[in-house]
Length: 333
Length: 292
Image (tube, rainbow over all chains, first blue to last red; front, side, top):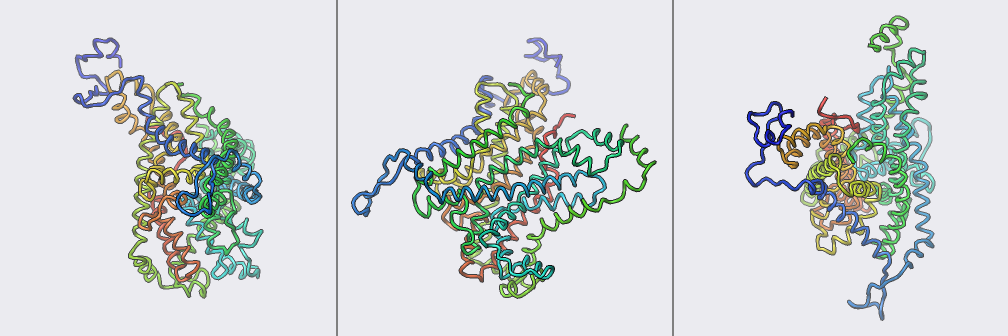
């Protein structure tokens, strides 16, 4: 670097530079954008795709949500249905639609069951993986993370079949061990647990890995000091490690909450298997799907999507406030 | 040094307690292992049974019909299952590869340059990570149908390329593993920005890029709603959609259940293999840099 201190040396090095060799653009074909535009060329593909895949559909949804179909005459023939402006009438339909809000409530209830259990297990397993004198840690890490490799839809299909009364291994095991017989996993109340179980099974491993990673990055000195003071592993885990990974636990909790409002695959697969135990409007997105496709009312479906998106946006802002600033503090601005 | 002192101190006072296994945490961990593996073992066992054995055999008693089931699945509608497998590999492999590339460019751009609108653009993409990709699937379909791309490979592939989470990770990796001093040195030596990125940035970020590839690969492999909405021809389906239609047919025709089960097993095996082979890339840590 010291050889390049003057412009003359920079332009024509008298001798080959030591260390990094001078890299020469090949011929005139090499593309070298002007420095001011450079950063934009780097981010351009991402921004263009983002606009095409996220923003334009979002704008289109907002537009559709203010439209409706008007039927002329008997509603027969090609020109009989046309799209007209509807103002906010779709939104007032959504706000007055008990079925939609029931699906939101169901998602909230589902989340209240899923999130504490999933994150509780994930935290416990992460602490166990990080503790001393525990055996089978490698096996545990791999096996518990493994369900993440199973697509949620396929995991839901497998669990759904395991719930089927005809060949349920759970029922036969419960019967053999405790004499409990014939649990109907699709019953009105139990079905929440049945669906939440699929979410717990699929989500624990991933969250465990996130928390385990943040545990591994903690300074080890505090534990040594505590050990010298006579603290046992359980006390170290609960009194030192747990408070130190609290920010990570909170972030995973918020991400899980957002994911819960969007839940679709698990209940949709269960709907197919459960003989009506899971209705077509069980979660908000299933309601959107039904209204858009089955009931063929794109405009109402769009308004519902926007309402869901707004609810999630509120949650998102909370996440951003928590994460954005701390992580990227040290970069060029 | 303090660790060495500690070890000798501990050996002096309680030599055995350091090696003794803690029973309760180990037990809890093993229960977790059983719970995590239970459905996978069950589907493995169930894939060896005929339809009647599924009803009559005890849950974990294997049958002997794995090969028969395999052949039935392979011959189902002229081998459409393997078409689904190829499609999934195309969507997930191609989508994840392009996604890693786009994320690397954007992450590097965000981490290593200052420019107007940087904060705004990055926040916008982050909001995209948090706001509902799934909610957008319906309008995406409507738009794609408008421009005549519905029921094409592109309809599934293009939305799979953009991954706000990948860009977020790439920015962290670029910030942590590509030192500004090296870029400065390359600039002084006359390397163009583009070439610096390809020759210096990408190699240094490459472990992180593999991680981004893997996460996106799994995300696309997992995706159900998007292809379910976008595609209408069976020969373009990925596995998730194909198996779902098989399950759908199975509710009225229970003879198909054994096909669904072996199909589910075969569709998770590639991902499980990928997990074991590329274990060291499955990390969420941010300190993986090349200059130490």
